[in-house]
Image (tube, rainbow, N blue to C red; front, side, top):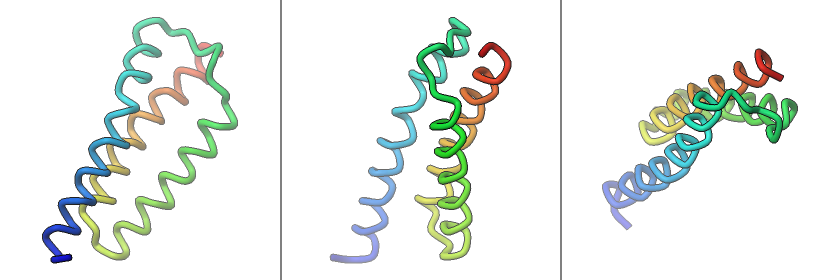
Length: 86
C-alpha cells in the first residue's frame, strides 16, 4: 500500500471518528441536558485524546493531529457543559 493510500485511509478514519461527536456536542449545547453523560468517561476520553494528539505531533501525522484537535474541542465542550449544568 502506498504512503498516499495510507494517509487517505487515516484521513477517512479521522473524519468518521471526529465528526461522530458533532451531533452529541450540538445536542448538549442545544438542550444543556447532560444527565445521560458520564463525567468520568468524558474526562478519561479527553485525556486519551490529548495523548493521541501528542502522539500525532511527535510522529507528525496530520490525520491524527487534525482529528484529535477537533475531537478534543468537541469533547471539551461536552465536558464543560457537564461540569456547568451537571
